[in-house]
Image (cartoon, rainbow, N blue to C red):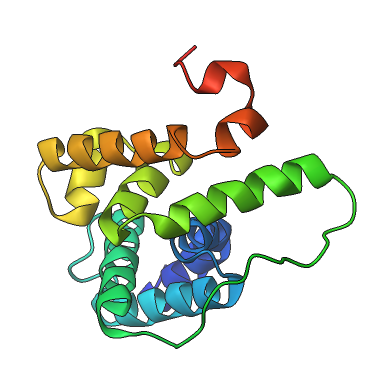
Length: 167
């Protein structure tokens, strides 16, 4: 199979997982689409030549792009407290919105660690490799981020009694 065909197959098969991770990082569906698109665009020139583990490579490109966007860009938009109604499954929606609200308050690296470790189910080592940092840094960011999640009013109640005390 040629590089172009392999790339097209990769995009077809892995786009949903990449979109999920990008959405969790950005908190915005449109920015997530942009992030995945930019990561794939940046990955294409090296596809098949220097890329031994394609998904890990694309994730790394996606994370570095996300972190650079957070450093350089400010769109002037401010989030509001009033969100549009979502219709059915209000409890699940409230939980998701609460989680996204808390994730949005975390520093970019803590947010990236939580997304990779707990939503993408990467190991500490894989997360460290993806972020280009040490395992200890991943543990530190995860600990601080989880503490923030656990101490956020309303989120613990939405998750249930056992979420706060580690049960």
